[in-house]
Image (cartoon, rainbow over all chains, first blue to last red):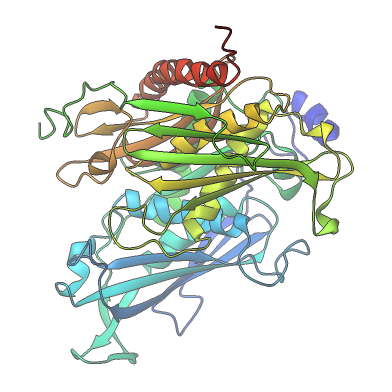
Length: 257
Length: 236
């Protein structure tokens, strides 16, 4: 399979006829796909489909950040979405995936966590973002990051009377969203760089670099994956592609409002 | 400009005092300790040995498995809960990926090489110190290696590029800070681990990686010295 993928890449083609720097053409974001969640979104990238949902709770802050809200990101590789995924405790791949999505959101300061404090040291809002792939046809990294941010954009606070959260009564108050980080994962196969890999492509990739960037084109998180080392030139090239492709993904989301 | 001078008084590109020793755990096939300032890593290599459960065995090549673990008393704040966490499992994965390019695992079909990395105390840069220790332990175990692996965290605090952040710098709150752990294969100059959190301009990344490459040259010297020291024969 690797040889086949490489030989057509040498001719400038991909398994599904795309160019190397092209995302799959069915790419869309739908909001409010889970009615009982405080916010949700579904991202479709070709045949890859990912749903992200946000649940809010009032909780005790961490002792080192007593006046800041809490973000939690989890992704489960559901056996429903890929025959290779197995039920049970999260695999290391699932953990890496959720932590990379988490870093993009956290490090870009997407949420103004100070605005999510209710009583310093005692009560803050906690935001749990759970990401569930429905169908994994490759590039869960970018689809998950996009779905997570879209779900945040869609989230409203439930009502809170100082004692209990009433999930049945939603307010119209949105999350204090300041930034929309966008992740683009660039895979290296042989001497080729591609974006939005299919499952088959990511399986044979030598290395990958996930590049999360802000609206102003600043880098806010990076993660190299794969077992082959890369050169400095490779990294420069992958970051450039990541920043460029982030612009078109960003258009799908619009602004923070 | 908020960050005009480093908290611990070092120059911007100065590494913390390092020390390395090879062959520190008698039971292990290879072992080493590597400390970078107050971060102290111990690494032990067991294997190649048969891999269980058996269905994990691969007749084509062996498995390199890393186990990153902080001792419960090794952190600055609250007790670290024992056992694997999401953080430690991710770090174990990226560490194994950082070490794998220098190994030839096809020599060990159906086997596993386990690398256990433990920390008695940490002051940021633990994954990098862990990689430095693990590379020494693998060499000490006598496994064929194409190169050593060196690692360091570089970063940006406010408008300053810094090398080898300590915990106070890593968690700097007064200004924007970015932390970039990098592993470099010293002979090829290739990069086998790259992570980042924080905010930087894209043009700043190559500059930071260049700083990391320079810094790892110094670490490489410390590693080589420690390896030679183990096999020194006293002829007097």
